[in-house]
Structure formats: C-alpha cells, structure tokens
Length: 154
Image 1 (spheres, helix red, strand yellow):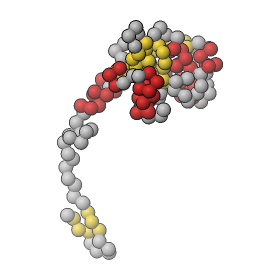
Image 2 (spheres, rainbow, N blue to C red):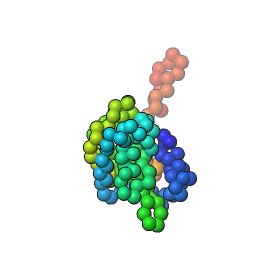
Image 3 (cartoon, rainbow, N blue to C red):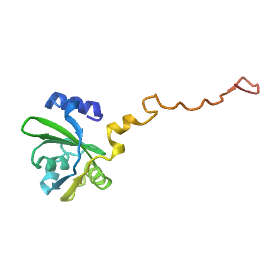
Image 4 (cartoon, helix red, strand yellow):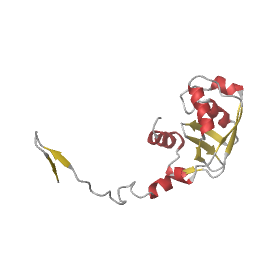
C-alpha cells in the first residue's frame, strides 16, 4: 500500500469508504503511546506501527495507517465508517522513521494535526499550471548543431 490510490482501493474494498467519506480533519488528535505498543508494532507496515496500535485505543477508532507525512484514521460512528486525514509533523516523523529502523517509540503523548491549507487536495487542484491550463511558459530559442558546422539559431 505504498501509493495513495492503492490505499483508497483498500478503504473501499474493506470498509466501503468511498471518496465521499474520506475527508481532511479539522481538529487535532492526541495519541498516547505505551510500551506495549512497541511490542505489538511491526516496522515499515503503516497499519501496524506502534502509533497505529496506540491510535486504535482512542474511542471510535477502527483502524489507523501512518505513512511518512500523512496519517489516515478510520472512525466508526453510529451510522457507519468514515476516514479522516491528519498531518504528521517533523518531530513525530523522526519518531516513526526511528521505529522503522527498529528503535522503540518513547512512551508519551503525540499529536496529529489538521492539514494546513497548502497540503489539502482542494488547494492543490486550484493552483494554476498544475492541470496544464495555467499560463504557458514563454517559448525559448532552440539551438541546433549540425555536423561540424556552426550553430544555427531558430
């Protein structure tokens, strides 16, 4: 599940969570890591890292996936399941990288934050030039070199 599209297919097939139920979060989430989370955690597996085990203890959380910069938390409410996307800050990223290198995560509280505006999908779609409809770069003069002759500019 290295790419986002594979992860979205996983959410759809296992939980029935389509694009209408995947959203960015608006509130931070605090997770408390205990020593037992390091015992059960599997390095380099987003669904089974120590932080994912700790997140599962949070009320309403069904599943958690921690990638390099983004965490997806699957919640269950009375009507069904929905997934929320969180941003992982630099300090927590270092802890996750250490865990993937077989270092235990120190017990304590870790906070997942909402995405900043530039990280959200909607903001990336609105940037000019990303979809190819933005301002075209000015044409440049190309130089062609012919066999042992001088350079011709066109």
